[in-house]
Length: 499
Ligand code: FRU
Image (cartoon, rainbow, N blue to C red):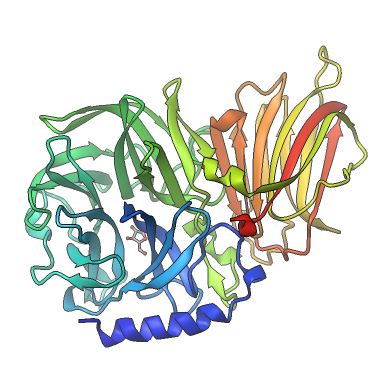
């Protein structure tokens, strides 16, 4: 039975969603049908289509009582909305249907596991939540919450585990065919741990053990885990809260963490070998992955940062968007990312320049402009024996308005700066990233959609993502350098209607 609350949300979102003009949304990044979006949820391939659910408040462009929004796609770039999938309409999830995941059952139904939130004490600040793991089963459009909910609660916690910070279950298939659920939890030391639960039927769950523990190394609580095999190793993705910055690797606040290591299938132990940030820009959080039929591991994150949500005005028709889907690989012990190859099919109108001299005069090149753009750039010093001061690209530019990328060879750092993007808020607007192998040649692929930029550095070794809310009429792109550089640029317009 679909509750009145969900019916109301479905009716509201259809109406409000239809009132948002096409140009007010990105061309190929998913936004909420109406209102607010955060984490990707339930990202899966089901009956030949990719399903992406998301944390959702349809009624306003701010975080509030969480629902699950829903969209489907066949190429992860053209999205069609489906009706909202879940509303906070039960006792155990009355204060929010938080993040979770989905997996196909052997009988062909789609199973969702999510976190139900109930505030048990409003007299204390912050409120005291109880977070439990709950199930809903359906046909890919409508979902019935299970009568046994919650299926994992505080009784399944290890000693000292918090019943308040216990969320974001990620369903996986274990190598022995059983189902696994990885759940974020706060341990007695105040920092995150990822708990593993196992089940043979996906409805009755038993606590198995701790897959990974923070021990206060990377921020505090860990949110939104994902865990998968990649190129012969295992990868644990999680999003730590309350990070301390560490060199150029980790930034303060809400961050992303990738642990690469070995997984013992019998003892269910994960041995970490390497750690790194997932994204080095301003906006990327809570990623989830899917495996494509041809074996590619593809990741999508929420292209927003909790520390900077105020960058979006509340009066805006929508808030929050997903990142580009990115193909993942492990190379040299690191996680590499590259825009999903389906994006190449959206490329149009190639414009190419080689060996362009760029100096102190701001340079605009014919054909190089736009807000839906795929642009590959190589930059090297004109005199190979000398260097240069800095190299700057400004885009989404009109007069004083712009977002910029600045490379300084002396530090080998790349900086993204959206201070002048039209934002009237004093929030996080800049981030820097250390770039390997760039003194001789800096290589970047820059993907612009109307409200974002994603910079893939050095073939995908590092990525910087940022949302920007500059009016889409600001389309100019310019180049400038202190000293002289030579630049090659290949640029395509990206158009979703080329299907
Ligand atoms: C991460 C997160 C999750 C939670 C959800 C609530 O961004 O805080 O831990 O399930 O958002 O919307």
